[in-house]
Length: 414
Image (spheres, helix red, strand yellow):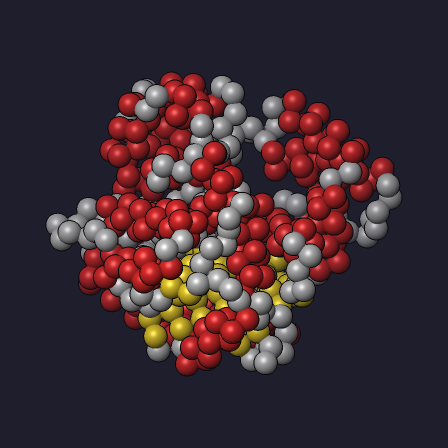
């Protein structure tokens, strides 16, 4: 019995995801698949376009055997922490043989080289990293420059263009997955599939694999029928079902008034307590937050080379869900505390039974059952997911009360 794992967002599940699933199953010679999937909010600091149960339905109906939720405290973090949260959960299941991820380069060797350097962080690398940060460059650019300097100084295999590798988002995530495997001393083996089709942020649509960003953009601007031929039938069916039920897709700007209220009323010390805030950024947020009534324009004004858009967006999402630096690191040290099931096929039920036998983590299928475990660590992390779900549905501005939805929605069992 061979199991391959994925760390995903499926926002929404498209042909590129289906290709990756099928190629991974073949390359790993796997019998079963598990997706660790972001729930209500995502790594780039945005709400999910659709609710997490709809995403789980899409995944299962397109062939994923088991969908587990990546907790909010990790789903809305930098690539490093996002990757760690996913890998740590997969590793803790004690049944996963492979982790498969997409990458622009499609080659593990250079990604492993970079991951190995980052796992150790040699003194020369750290020195160059500090210097680049002192120039006002963002962390990602500073890190890329430091890695290139280290590779050139020590003449590490120069058959690859490491600068180009570090400029691509899926490569960066892949490096972080590999680094986490090293740091956790995990037995899980990595597999990478060369990304095919459009880049993550490509808005152009064509008959090859359209990006999730392009698909969402087309739905917003041209309506749901505009992407009917760009996603699997199962995905389109569940998107239609979602729209009939909730009437609105979710976007960051749906929280405009809530975020304006928070920015303009929060105590500066509380703003300074957020993860990824550094001295001066809190003043920049308050300053521009009082000069504009549009959250997208406020973010545009705050963004600099040092402060990338996704970092600012994540700060706002953490503000929405009251996640500060101190709380995050407390929860980091007790993670993972549970396994949350969002969807499963017939093979997925087999995997759940196997997890029960091989892992000590409690498995939550019916949300209310968390109370039976009487575990404070579990409850602390889970309550961020519960609150994230409530906040997600607030963005839909429904006339129907959509509160406590974690209690009312069961995992999708096919």
